[in-house]
Length: 107
Image 1 (cartoon, one colour):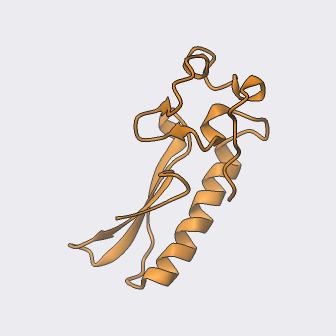
Image 2: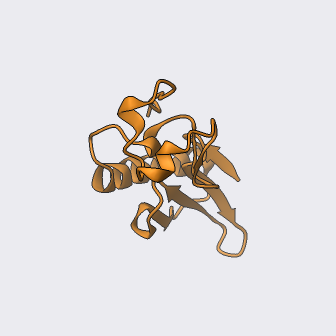
Image 3: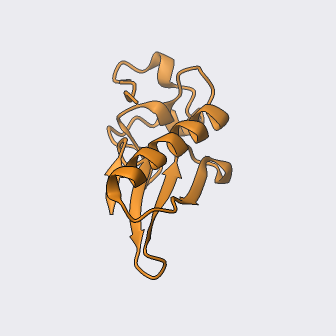
């Protein structure tokens, strides 16, 4: 498994179908999680297609404003702030503009 963008995009080789699969997690809701078969066995092609899929999902589901889920400190696997800022959970991710530790993920 290959992890990109701080764990928000994962590439996995499906051994039964012999092709790459992309898993995207861009937020806490069900609509913020998606999976797509990339229809290729080549890693380089799979990576390019997965990045396009990630950017499409992000553009469709995430707003342009700052939110905790677009911060480097956010862990998508555990759905928590790695630094431990409790306000990001209490405000549903809207604490980011006031957070001194906020650092935007560079896509």
